[in-house]
Amino acid sequence: MSSSSSSVSDGILSFATQYSIYSGFITFSFGVIGNALNLLVFTQLKLFRTNRCAFYITIESISNFIYQFFSISLTILTSIYGDDATERSSIWCKFRFILAQICALTTFYMVCFSAIDQFFSTNHRFNLRQMCTLKIGQYVSFILICFVIIHSIALGSSYNVQPTSGCIISNYVALQYSTYFFYPVLVGSLPIVIASSFSMLAYHNVRRIVRRQLPIVRRKLDKQITAMVLMRVIVFVCLSLPYNAHRIYVINHPTSRSMPMAYAISRLLQAIFLSMIITNYMVNFYIFIIFSSRFRRQVKFVLVKKCWERWRYWCCSINNRIEPDNNIERRNSQMESDENI
Image (tube, rainbow, N blue to C red; front, side):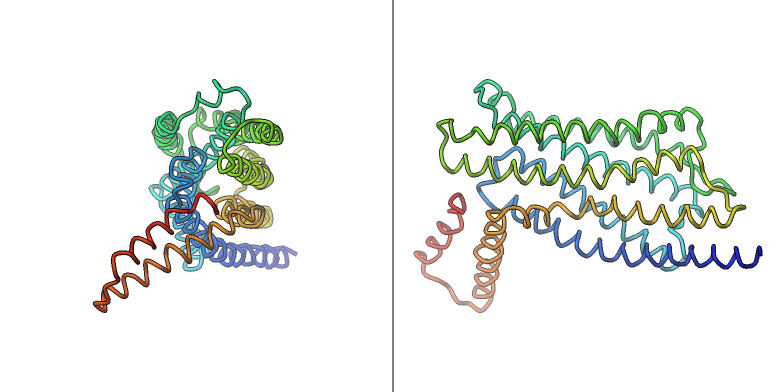
């Protein structure tokens, strides 16, 4: 009977390992492409360069980009050793959770900042619309990132490798803090409530935007960004809740290796919920391109009119083909006319 149970638990562990490997490579591939295109669009289009919400989305994409490479390193370790090596080294155990928390908190609260910014940007009261500026957004983002780094180092340092349970929190105070504040509040209910509330309020504001005397370009941009942020928040909530609930349970009830079946099931659930939260770091570009036809046109414009034209120009320069000045000026004026997309 014990032999049969052992073979079943080994099979579950093997499946969990294979699931982690394949899901890791898939999310990495889509995540790198999606976040790279996000960075390209939001930094290359003049329309987005002074937009606060686009600034927050850019920071989120950079954070997601870093997390994708961190995630693929775990996937490679899993494919080589059969696990992510956090139970082999105390330093790697701490560093993994420090970096993961930095990326998670940065991404989660940039989603919140995007929703808050859209609420103020689309508000019918002029003083509220003028309250948030790009410079204030930059200061707030800098303060948040500094806090996130300090907080993650302090909390991540409490992780240690235990012989029976693996990489877990060994400090009682840190355990209580993670159980009752960090997972349920700081990365759980707080960003979910903030992002959900302000995105719904922004959506309510944008429905009345036609009544305000605004330039057509600004009106279109507000509608586009608000719809994109709302859909991002919905997906963010759906992908974050299961993982946070699972982490709270795992922290308080770590499974020992001495119980092979329970340990194998725990590893499988961990792999599934981890793949869900990793999806949160790669999905924003695909949400934007699915739900915003205007964003699809903007992506096409950047890829064709900016990247492809520049590449052709560089190739022509290398081949000593010099274009007349009026052609170059015409291209530059065309590349700066993205407000009408």
